[in-house]
Length: 296
Image (cartoon, rainbow, N blue to C red; front, side, top):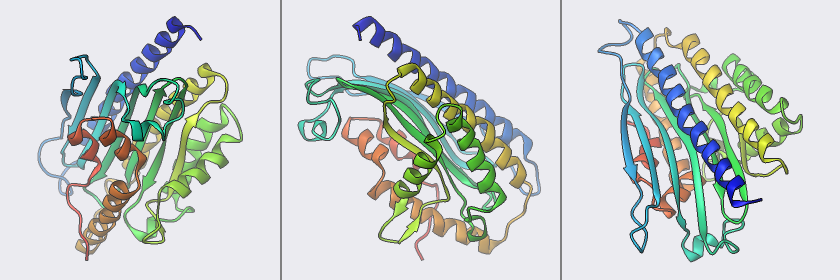
């Protein structure tokens, strides 16, 4: 692969991730506009977009940055939709964990979108999605989407919300390879698991990493389809649930379940570790934390 081809691929991925951030922000703001009293009060929330830059390199060179998008609204108590494109060199210890970093002298390039949504209404499921491209001496894609209902009766693979979410992710996978969905669903169930609690974080979805099928075009198209599938299905699930009222007991259950989310992200999440180890925006990285949580 020539340098020109690699640069074209990086720019193509950059443009897609940046545009997907804008598309998802628009969808979430539409939902903010739709909800009304008596369940929701105040003005519709709007995203605040904050550009950020990674710390300069040892010789003052640019090392990328991104745009952090944060919303604190009436439907979404907290939502973060972030785009980043960072490059530079891994630390020696971290480089040893990343494929191809030994042959690139630790040099890397990474771009992607990452989001987390914490709704105010416990009946509306929380959700996480990210997709990314990473380059060392090799290049690959990773990402996925997973749904996290906070009420026990919704935390069932046979619940209608789960079935619809799974079908959306399966369709994105099946358009490229029928083997993807069972593999990536199992990976998601294994990855988003809290060993110390012996319980899953949510009800799953798909998760994939270091994805190299042998065709960059196919892998990029698959990653695009994951993003499109998420953008289509999550607003549908929100609209099915946002008019349902909730009790103080359900709010309490939501806050305790959010505590589990905090535990996973701080103890096990690769994306959190990667961001902190590569000099990412700490505010953006930790924006996945819910606005309020409880440990009984």
